[in-house]
Length: 235
Image (cartoon, rainbow, N blue to C red):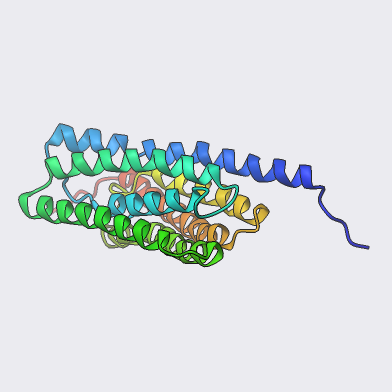
């Protein structure tokens, strides 16, 4: 005997996961605030990387376009959360550019302009595709690729954490919010039968788990090291 989920229940579960994803995404959007408070206070970007914000902006812009009725059906929650996210990312990038060294400042400004130009090309090119399904697949593949790139961007920070054995440059709430948001939209994508959403967010969930495990592992090591008694040498 096979059991099916009633359509109303199916829709409620999907929307609940989408709303949860929006809430956790907001947590993700505001999580860099302590980092930028430090950057503003020290008047320097130190060893913080601006690439995650570039990737996040590109992802938000492409996913916003994917969520519009011109591309996909019934993905308003995807469109709204990513449009809000784009505003946050642009703000962070501008602040990063202001306080970065000259070389990094020029590089970040160039990347920002490249993202804007790429979005214009994507929108203009996709609108030339008459077949609605082909347009959906084309933008869906792009949004999937951009999501995977965004979730993979913390690999730079993970490498820094492993190399320095310190979680100083990997904020906990950023990792936690990433995990919760990607998990919520992974579930949302499954209920919405949208592989362009659940596949990349499934990868994001796995990477989020890795970040959290690394955080707790190296945080524990740093605590244990700080608790070790000082060694006194007697000659």
